[in-house]
Length: 156
Image (tube, rainbow, N blue to C red):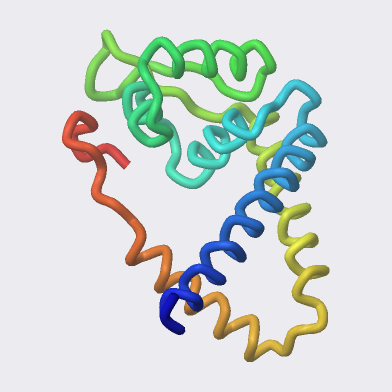
């Protein structure tokens, strides 16, 4: 293995550890927001909090699942009182999904808890190191972002 390949392999290992740890932490924090909340469901809530009301088809494209799967997830979140359906302003036959007040509060609770966890993890870092890490991570995320699949029609 060349030095460059070894470097990439080491980065891949560290990235895999990061993803596993973040997923586990998000699962714990999501359950604190609601005991019946799964990681995938929390990600839907976070997307709605960030982007506002969306059609179910847009949400299905965003998370990469089928319409029946997104319907089940949305029914679960609706039963928990975290989302609600509202009429689409441009089409009275369609509906959008949006967070309820409780949904907004729960997402904010998890966001604050995640921020606290990051603060603890980065507590020994200098402000400049954190700023550099954030800039490099943003650069990486920007280059890793794939265009939406054609079937999504440009939905975010």
